[in-house]
Image 1 (cartoon, rainbow, N blue to C red):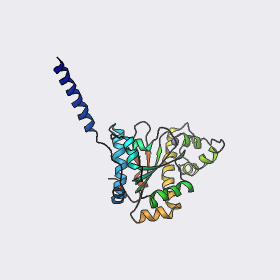
Image 2: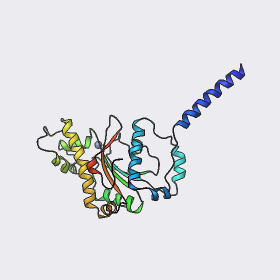
Image 3: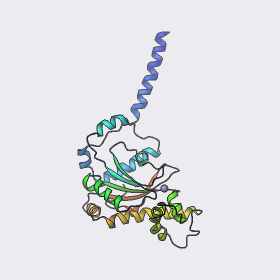
Image 4: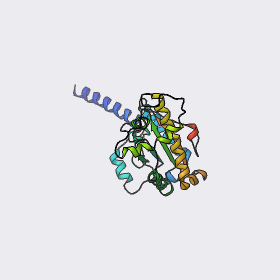
Length: 241
Ligand SMILES: [Zn+2]
């Protein structure tokens, strides 16, 4: 009887081990790996990570081990600019671990000088190969901007989305947050405007793109599916695989 119970547990233990082995483990990025990586490879790594996340097969991570492995340096493959929204976590939706990506967050995912300077550090000095500007669906900041909301310093924050509102044709009516199609068109326009704005304001980053050292891309995260869709007309220095 005892032997039967033991063998039963052995079968269960074996099944658990097999299940764990089926999900590949993560590895932190090294200086050599970052140096050898092209912007295209870094972009494709984001695409593949998002596919794993959306499919529910994110890598098996031991974050405690990653703390140890990254304690002496960081060699991230990319930078993600995203909204403050608590549901949009790039480390999760691109299935990355510690030391994999820099993340810049601000309500409405726009880029002012302080943010752009941070990106120049991340790419030119810290070696990251791709910059992804990622907006998201049903964005509260975009809705607030569409309604002309004003409150304290938030007034200044939302004013940064005005160029995107202007880009949406006047034929799209009504122009407020009650029109989901208008809100999404503003969010899309904001990503495109932000990508363009970063490259216009940063000679450092523009030169890196021109030299094949950096890819800059824009996309939209769908809160209902977990998928990021990149806009082909926002791709600089990389292409869709
Ligand atoms: Zn948002």
